[in-house]
Length: 505
Ligand code: GLU
Image (cartoon, rainbow, N blue to C red):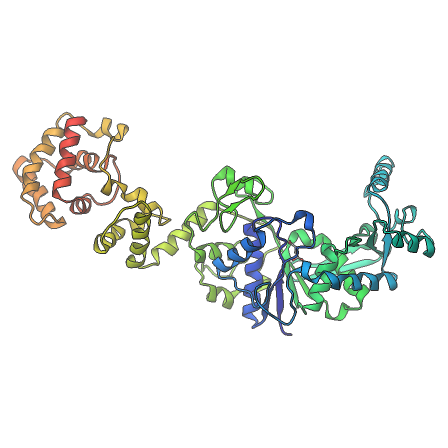
C-alpha cells in the first residue's frame, strides 16, 4: 500500500509540543515507507482563527526539519491545502448525505437547544445530547414536512446539517496503537457536519479531505479518538469504507509531576517552554517562550519528542532524523501517556552540544558576544570554549560561565569569602605576585612554575593559595581551571584583580 499521511493543524494558536510530536511521527512514518507527508490547514472554524498561527506552525515544523511534500505553500495533486479555500467542495458532500438519509437539516435556534439541554438535565438523563433519543422532539427535517423544510431554507433561516447516527449499532475502530475500540452508536450524538454559513465542521471536512487526498494512515492525538467512530460511520455513509484510512491515536504528553495533559501552565510553573518557537499572542500580547529561543538545538528537540511515546526497543537514546526514520514503527508507540521530563530535555541538549566541534561552538560564542557588543578573536574564543564546553547545556550559558573573563568581579561571594578568605590570604597573594611577574610568557606552564617556586620558597600548599586567588579573580568559589583562567586574563589583569581583592576583602 502506498503511504500518504497528513498533519492537519487548526490555526487557533501556537503549536504545542504535543502537536509537533504528532507531525514528527507522521513525517517519520511517511519517510520510512517512501510515502507522502501532507500539511493541511484546518481553518473552517473562523471564530477560532488566530492571525499568525498558520505561519507559526509552518516555521516551527521547518525549524524541526519536519518537511512536508504537499501543503499550502507547496503545490501538489490535492491542492488547495487550506480548508477555507476548499469551502465550495464540502456542500456537495453534505447534500449527498442528506439525499442518502445519512444526514438531516436542523433548524433549532440556540434558545431551543438550550431549552432541550435544560429539560434533559432535569430528567436526569446521563447523556443529554442531540441524538437518537431526542432528535424526534426537535425542529429538523425528520420531524417537519418537506414543504416546511423548503420554506425554512428558502426564507434564509439559519440551519445546520447533522449526521443521522443509526441506533444500536456496534461501531469498531481498528486502531494501530489501541487495537479494536468498540462503541455503541446510540451513545453518539448527531454531530453538526455543515452550517448554513457554508462552512463544514471539522468532522465533515476532515473525512472528505482525508478521502480526497487519499490518506492511507491517520496518525493524530488521542483527543480525537472519541471522534473516530463518527468518522468511521461517515466513511461508511459515503460508501468509502473500503478505502478508509487506518487510524493510530497517539498517547498524550503528560505533565512532569502529577497527572494530566502537559499544558502551558505546567511550563510556566516549572520553567520550561511548551512551544517550539516563542509566540506572542496577537490579542493579549502575552509572550510564551520557545525551545529555539531557550537555546535548544532543533535536533535535540526532535530527539526528545521522538522518545516521548515511542521506544526504539534498544538502549539507544541519541537519534539523528535519518536514524529515527530508519527505526520508527507505530507498533512501538505505547498506549499510555508519556511524562515529560524537563531535566532529561536539558540532558539531550547537553549531549548534542558536546557532539559539536569546539570551532562550531566557538563561532556561536563569538555571535553571542557580538550581541553584547563585544569582540573577541577566534583563537581566544576557541580557547575559552574548550575550557567551558563540558559545563554547559546551552550556548547562552557560555556567557554566564565566562562573563568574569570580560568583567572584573565587583563583589565577592560572601559565603565563600567567609569560609576561605583568611586573615593571612592577602599576605599570601601579595607574596605570590612577585613569582607571577616572573612568568614569561604568562601561560599555564609558567604560571604552574610560578606557583611551585612560591610554594618552595614559603612552604605553603596549593590549598592555601587557590581558594583566595579564585575569589580574587572570579568573584566566586567555582569555575574552570584557574591557571587557564589566568592565562586568558593576562598578567596585568590578574595582578590588578589580586590588588583589588586584597584591598576590598
Ligand atoms: N484539525 C485537527 C486538529 O487541530 C486535526 C485532527 C486530525 O488530525 O484529524 O488537531
